[in-house]
Amino acid sequence: MKTNWNLDKLYKDYNDPKYEEDFQKLEVAYTKLHEALNKENNVEELLLCEEEIMEISMNLAIYSELRQAVDSKDNKAMSQINRLMVLQSEAAKDLSSAQKIFGKADIDTDNKTINDYQALLKQAKIQYKHLLDDEVESMISAMDISGGSAWGQLQSFLTSTLQVEYNNKNITLSEIRNLAYDPDEKIRKEAYEAEIKAYKKIEDSIAFSLNNIKNQVSMLAKKRGYESPLELTLENSRMSKATLDAMLEAIKDYMPKFRKYLRHKGELLGDKDGLKFYNLFAPIGSLDKKYDLEECKDLLVNVFKNFTPELSNMMKEAFENEWIDFYPKSGKSGGAFCCGVPSLKESRILTNYDGTFSAVDTLAHELGHAYHDHLMNNERIMNMDTPMPVAETASTFNETFLGAYFLQKAQSREERLALLENDLREKTQCVIDIYSRFYFEDTVFKKAKEQFLMADDLCDIMKEAQELSYGDGLDKDYRHPYMWACKSHYYSSGLSYYNFPYAFGNLFAQGLYALYLKNPADFLPKYREMLRTTGVHSIEECGKLMGIDLTKKDFWNASLAMIAEEIEEFCNL
Figure 1: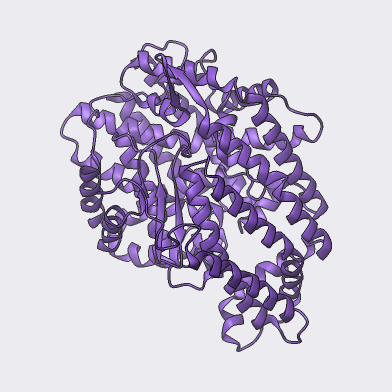
Figure 2: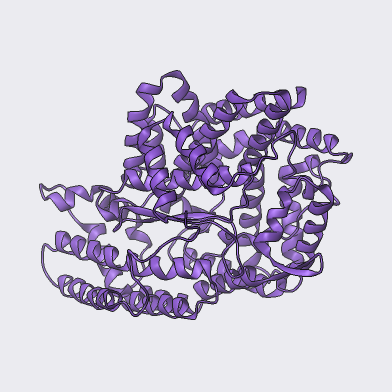
């Protein structure tokens, strides 16, 4: 099995004639869009032009971004990303004009293209009032290249190339963070201390990145008439504030349960004043088996065959057909992600695999994203834009399904304890840590408008966020003030608050799994249809497809109550 992904199906390299041909096709497509703007009854033609633009530009962008993800020093990739952004910024005026036409269009018609894009056109009508003058939209797009996007690239470059001094050698940030899962407390503590120390080398530069990105987003949100960047995010996510508030209020109600789990884990590890951060990911019980890639593949393929062979077969294809880039290395992005490639009807997955059960769980998560992509592969390309919150549904459902499978198969008390703890550790991250990230980002948005937030200020806000969410579950003398520096989710000028979708995805998936257990045969068709159509529905409509009212605390309380039961079992074991 090859351990690096293969991008040759897109382009062999930048010298591939197809690459330049596609760039020229994209330029022609933008010209066609410009010409169509001056025609009457042009809604269908404009939609077809934008469809063509998206199909070509996605291939070009995906290729360069994936190359850069595994090698932040790939100068060719960086220059091609900028080249594409320049072309897109030059067309921003025309794209803005098209959006205004969509916002005013009569969509009551028998035209197939217009009917296929009903959801997109309805969203355009909602966003119409927030569009600025075409020249201003063009200038915003052009300036973002050397503004917010450049600051985001700086954070990515600094964290992916940072050398961390550990045991008399230099290793990557991804490698040092992976040691948080090591069974040896001494290794975890030394890795934590080395990580915290290493951020000192880059903290000021990253602080500049965060301040400038957030101020750019705030300024543009205000110019567009939004009350806040959060309102902008919710509108783009097709999610109501009522749903977000219901979920956050339910989480607040259940925080004492999560803190009980953290304190109990701390007591097991000898932490008397709450869990020390370097023990947050410490394994408990006997779950020290390491899985090589063949074992990982066989495990996932066989487990998910019990859910649906469709998913199992797709997983097998992903392992065997070079969809996945597995191992950490210098210059490679940390964490993990999945990128759908619609033109290939495939996905590409980045992970920093270390063979632990947690790494297997992460792969299951990313393959859930790939399954979501798979179900949408036959949709029209502009109907594949899934709102952030439901984008984490299939991935988190996979984690829930895998965890439940292992719990059912547990052979001993120690194994069950380890599996419960692994599951609770991940759910605590998706609920409690995400709450802290939401609070942190919300606070930064508000404070950055009034003052420049130096690295020490950002560390103080992060500690405040961790106090609010983790409370006495974490030892106040051993928290992680630099969680703002290593999370790439904060550093996008086009995507804010990429935190609450993880809590949404986790709790939504928890509730969906409960529905699955009640009636598997009835669940699967509804689940597939819901995932297939996420690009054309609001968050609340997705819930209704599954018989759930997401604006009520009842659903969120029920999902959190299931986690609370696991916490009680863990503490009793």
